[in-house]
Length: 158
Length: 72
Image (cartoon, rainbow over all chains, first blue to last red; front, side):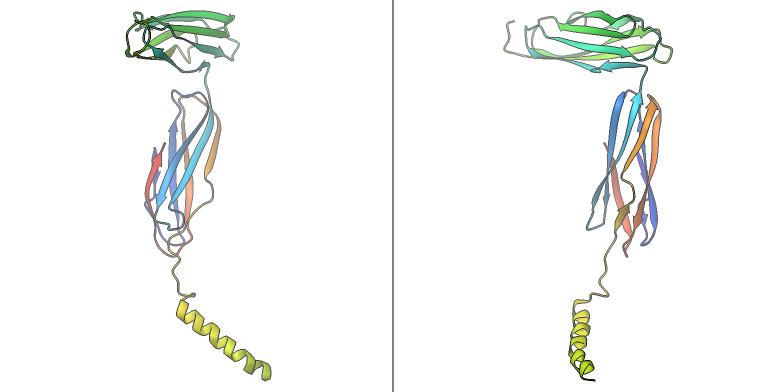
């Protein structure tokens, strides 16, 4: 979001205020804004805001893309990591793709690192979207949502 | 005296050039000057709103118009 002074007299000063909502971001972010003016030498300028968004629980990647040919099995993995000393507990509470995708939660390092493996169930060509929601024992992040997108083209077996 | 006489045609030439090209009177138009283009908010917690104000100076001789600011 941006607020700005529309006109600045010769010799004067104006303000451009940018706001960045960091909800749903993690790690390093950089947001840019293009400024268009009537300055003939410099009609476009780019402003940027960068930050490191600290989250109690890191997901990498944040989204799962299962892409391939229809009828094939595709597997993708999401890594979940915490930096604090409080051991993380995960409990699945919602999954809306049970007919198209299976998942398995693997604890790599007790209470600190987990992997969630998603595997597509072979089926026809098409696109689907869904989420896996996991309940946590972290009061500052009581729920984790992993978004899943499946895109399967014709050409495989089945 | 001789030096002064020799310098006179050059002075006339400079004045004529100035009048014909309009160097002194030429408008420079609006000029956007940003002292800062990048802001580092450093470490923040997820969900916080980062708000930062950039200062724009108009060092030109005509009104500077900010037509739009497109985030993203």
